[in-house]
Amino acid sequence: MELLKNIFFNTDKLVQNSTVKISYTGKFFEDNSEEVFIHYGFGENWDNLSEVKMEKTELGFQTEITLLESNTFNFCFRNGKNEWDNNNGQNYIFDLESPCLELTVSNNVYGMDKPNRLRKTYIWSKKIRIAVYKIIRYIPKLITGNYKRKVEDK
Image (tube, rainbow, N blue to C red; front, top):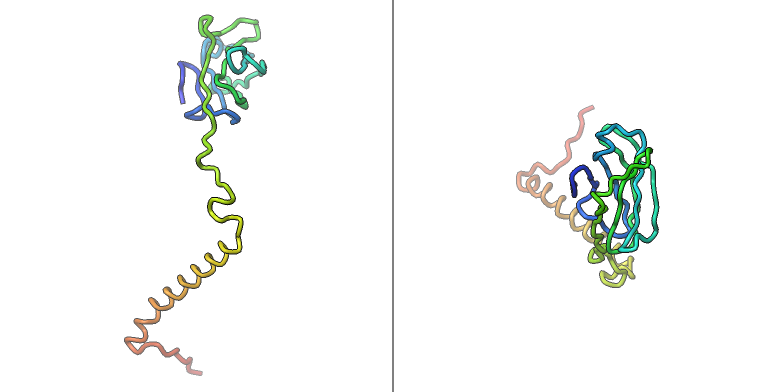
């Protein structure tokens, strides 16, 4: 996903408490810099400030970062010559979304507190499928009279 020119993420949404891969093909990649660091933090005050060296690849400089629980993800880039790409003084700031909890399964919602009941249901469904298969397979043989096993001649 391209959110800004020359910055790519491997996901459509930036979600709190998840890991995201960032690819940078901006000014420092175009200038053929040997080293690029991503300088990042979270929230308005740049909490949990960190800096990570990015790996140089054919697709740009890349790294993986674990997004913390915050409302924004802020970052800028620095090369080995201590030059900065900070979006013309604005920094790169992206909103973080809360994780979707709707798909989380609670043990009590679907009767999972009684796994034995689930197992019995599964076994009965298998038995019914086998019975239906046998009926479909052997009824035509009964109708045509072709149900006797063939005896091999010795």
